[in-house]
Image (cartoon, rainbow, N blue to C red; front, side):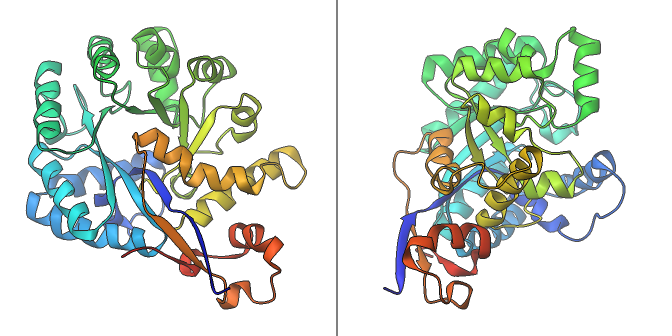
Length: 337
């Protein structure tokens, strides 16, 4: 046996344009990095998005991701260009089109929530798989969140939102609204079985209880969260509540699903002070089926494992999956690309 076929890995959270920042923004903190990111975002135009995203999506395919959720907030015309890039690269795409009422830079923002939803409808009319993505409680006011939550329910669309990534975000939400970010999302109808909360790094027990009770998901992006010094995902408290988990490459500082899964289990082990906290089969589901569910995918391409690769030399068949997750990089994987 030289090949082992597995469900393809699903990248449930990507900002493909941020791949251009790889290696260029070390130092400072999240907020310093954000300034560099905003400067890069100002330069995005459809032609650049199309050409650069093709390369990023091909890198994902080479790493074993066969589907991607592109959380897109750099313009409407650029959203169409991102979809064209995914089609050219040959990766399955869910376009998570972002709503932005305030903050950021002008090109992120729509002038009303009605305008945003009209843009969503136009993208859907082009045959694209579209999800709703209120960027965050910083970017969307409660009235926007409520309208987007209603639309998601009415049209059975997935809803993705950043929440509790940074302590400052939590503090500002409490100061403005008197509640924490996920509490505000729940209050405005944005937490349900269609919801994926991205990060939840600094979520409280009460917020995690809300996600559990609503059958919502969490998308964890360990390599980006480490790179940006966000903190450790509360994977122990998430798993205790049986909250569904998926993974994302986010800023694309690294594109390797095995590394994301290894980081998750490594965090869980450090917190529990024991090994084998999350079963390997469950980790692999985090990387594939749970991501597909978060994006509303019923089918997506498989990926092949080269069991003759030097990284797997001498490994018994019974130990292949643990060896894959804990001892290999994405170089052992191959996709249809």
